[in-house]
Structure formats: C-alpha cells, structure tokens
Amino acid sequence: MNPSDIVWPEIWQGLQDTLVMSGFSLVFTLLLGLPLGVLLFLTGKQQLLQHKGFYAVLSVVINFLRSVPFIILLIIMMPVTVWLIGTSIGIAGAIPPLVAAAAPFYARLVENVLREVDHGVVEACQAMGARRRQIILGALIPEALPGLLAAATVTAVALVSYSAMAGAIGGGGLGDLAIRYGYQRFQADVMVITVVLMVALVQVLQVAGDRLVLHFTRR
Image 1 (tube, rainbow, N blue to C red):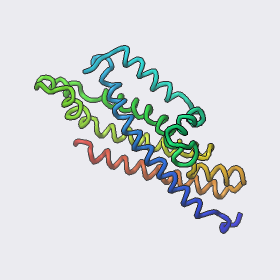
Image 2: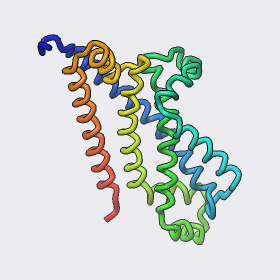
Image 3: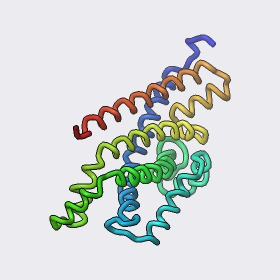
Image 4: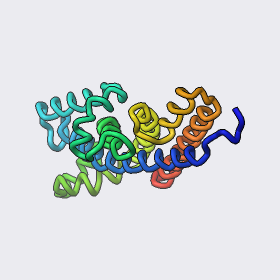
C-alpha cells in the first residue's frame, strides 16, 4: 500500500472523534459513578447509612451492568439511545452506552477507594459533631482524592478501549476507521496507525493521571 493512499484527513478526524467521545463519556461517567460509588460505600456494612437491602440491590445492578460485554451492551441499548439522543450511530449515539458501561465500573472503584480511608477520620468528625454531609464532603472525599483520581484514570483508559468497540456499530472514531479500512478493505497500514494512535492516547492519559495523583497525594 502506497503511503499516499492512507486517508490522513479521516484518520485525524477519527482521532478527534475518539477524543470527543471519550471526553464527554468520562465527564458523564464521573458525574454518575462518583455518587453511585459513595452511595455504595455509605450503605455498606458498618457505614454511616448502613442499609443491607438497599446495598444488595444496588450492588446487583452495578455488577449486572459491569458483567455485560460492551459490544452486547451497545446493541441492547440502541432503543434507549435513540430515545435519549435521537440516534444510535455516530459520536452522540455511542456516548450513552459508553457511560452505561463505565459508570458502574467507576462506582465500584470509588467504593473500594473509600474503604481504604482510615475509619478514624470519620470517627473524629463524628466526635466533633459533624453532620453526615460534612463528613462526606469535608473528610471522606478529600482523604480519598488521590485514589479517586487514580480510579478516574483507569476508567478513562477503559473508555478509550470501549470507544474503539463502538466503531463496530458505526460509532465513529479510530475504531470505526480500523474496521472500515484495516479490516474490511485490508489496509494493514491504516490498522497499524489507528493502533499506534490509541496506544499513544492511553499513554498520555495514564501519565496525566499519574501526575495528578502525585500532585494531590499528601506527603
């Protein structure tokens, strides 16, 4: 394949689409996943809002969403996506299933991070008469911030991978290019370029996330 035959404009557009898709999905994932994870933690055993039944139901729902393969989730969510967005293809059509897959994943990570916070911090706040909201926003979240940022980094990397799979149903981005040119038209060079760009994107996300974690880690 001649290098001049490589569709560079489409490749750069695919990179932009992947960035937009992953970026918006990450924002919505954090907005949904963080409260869900905090709620999971607070309703767990020996926590501020302990409620065995509620925790069990929420945990089952989150585990169910996490266990469904993303490619299947893309398909079964098409009617919901059309209802929400008006289309099930393109960047907009890929965002709802991306969020549905990543938010439960991030919520479980948030729960695990909060479990690592020293329970003495909560007890100290209670001894000083702090309310639940003050304990959560003033103690738990700040103490867990480095871990929450690390979890967000892991989720962002997962979203890049998910966005590539969204290309299988016309979601756009680098995954779509890899399928249309690299697989269907046997242009191996396009496949290699898309893979290299995605690896580079993941590396940038990981380095940026690690630096944020280091910055907010108390020494």
